[in-house]
Image (cartoon, rainbow, N blue to C red):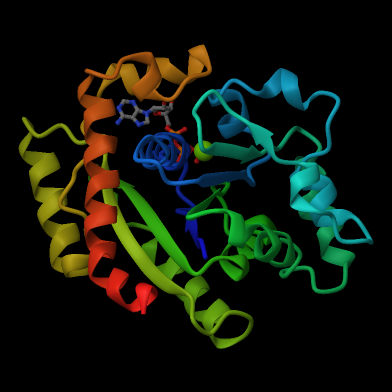
Amino acid sequence: MGRIISIANQKGGVGKTTTAINLAASLAMGERSVLLVDLDPQSNLTSGIGLTEAVASKRTVYEALTSDTPLDPREIELDTQVTGLRLIPADRHLTGAEVELVGMLARESRLRPLLQQAKSRYDYIFIDTPPSLGLLTLNALVAAETILIPLNCEYFALEGLAELTSTMQRVRATLNPTLDLEGVLLTMADTRTRLGQGVAEEVRRHFGDKVYDTVIPRNVRLAEAPGHGLPAILYDVRSRGAEAYLALAREILDREAPRLPDSIL
Ligand SMILES: Nc1ncnc2c1ncn2[C@@H]1O[C@H](COP(=O)(O)OP(=O)(O)OP(=O)(O)O)[C@@H](O)[C@H]1O
Ligand SMILES: [Mg+2]
């Protein structure tokens, strides 16, 4: 059974989408089956993986959220260029969903049944969320088992995290009691600067061993790859960015290793 992980931080531009694409592609290279879900109206995930055109005539996550009758996820999943990696895409229609959902029944729980249906076919499902704590992000937190928080190594990295934490607690108290923190990922690190190191230390003091050992460096290949519609491992596998996300995938698989005997029994 797959694990459903929301990648969330309401702060913009911290590396949520870059992490979704590259972590998912790295796990797929490790022969895991992975589903990406684009829940951001900017649809950077869909375009970053090169599928904007494939979406034009197809249904997207928008229909899944707003339709009266439940959709079968297989009707909206698309193949990507990476074997084992599939995508539930978004397009600009999703912009309206934030408003349309307000008047709907179970407005925070509309994504969950779709992913519950998909879960048995995947090892991992990652949801990329928008930079806000609105209804789309709430749907992601209700649908997910855990949340992965990317933090960029900047002075204000921890700012706004109290809001995210209290949203998590609210979701836990109501619609998703088992929602847990998957991990905290330091992104866009410039290890040469003292500021970056100071921020990393502060984040580790705050979140302890929930912070991944792997730190994603600032690397121009990671910024270029989506313009070519590719994960960094296909665009330039030797880049430091691609290597860092492969290391993160390895770290996540290693963290899971102790759980294996249970699942075998
Ligand atoms: N490690 C990195 N090194 C260099 N550039 C990066 C890195 N990670 C992300 N970027 C670039 O920084 C920008 C923001 O990253 P990204 O889109 O992943 O953030 P986001 O949190 O998804 O943003 P939003 O909140 O708008 O959805 C993008 O242009 C991306 O290509
Ligand atoms: Mg994004």
